[in-house]
Image (tube, rainbow, N blue to C red; front, side, top):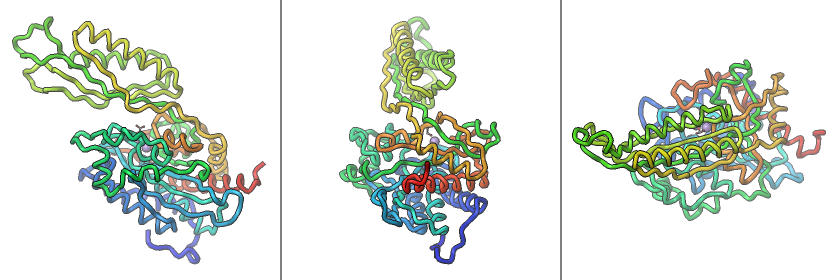
Length: 432
Ligand code: GLV
Ligand code: MN
Ligand code: MN
């Protein structure tokens, strides 16, 4: 984005906004820690380059840019006119970290949409009665450290200091990684927003599911973000000789873990709740040799549902079944929770603002829940959360095939602008 001259730049239409969004997303997609695929983990060299690029775009859109203690890029502009909310600001954000071998749109589009909306509001010479702060978070995916949402938690004033000692697979602690990134862990309290200064939080995100495509709609308003629990599971058996230990005398950690995983899937599919999902996405077997009975298995468990009760009931059942399996097989079993987000409702006023933005485009307003986790879980500790979903091809996400049509992204930026204007009308007391 070259430095704009807003006196002369014409306003853009949705098609142009979508094309611009695609160009910025494609630039971000070149920043990867693994050539040939998009992998941008929290506080990695590629994340560092992405913070610089996003900072440049924010500056070009007229925002005052800083990097906070958790590596969140923050671009701020003050209210353009005096009024009761001129000391407040609306947060607009998403994340620029990715999963391993991920897609280009997850999170990244939300950051780009926020920047383009601010840029466009200037082109249209809109004077808002409140400030805006665009946030590019770094730890939404929770792939590198067992932390998840560390950066948005800090903005919300809900950062858990114990996170600083958590280590990645290479043994680097979050504290060490922050310092290497150029951040100051001692300044984490300064990253927190004062709730009295915040109007709300808006996030635009690809749906990561098939509902909008099925409904032939480009956009939808999110009503709630599914609750989510994450665990580290450990099964401890005993190593032994694969040729000499009889089957009935083994304490095989992997065979026990396999049975536990079968139970996890059975419990999630048992019909307790259609939205209940449970995933074991990581598995490490020790010592991991062809002729050694496995002594230890470490695995991850991610479990979610649209409401809290079925998720919590499923966790209790998984624990009970795993205990039985462990006792029968004479192996120890541990399930240590490290992330817990209750179901996060979206604020009615912010849902209405996004609905107004969609309605202004002549589109039907569909409301849907989010099965994916979002920074809104953490930001909910600070302020109300509103989310807009954008159709993505075949609902595919966390996959290099992830794709959103530029035309849909253009409509999403327009709907975000519409939502900001609706909130401005609310602040001006114009909405009935
Ligand atoms: C983040 O994308 C998550 O839902 O795990
Ligand atoms: Mn995301
Ligand atoms: Mn994701």
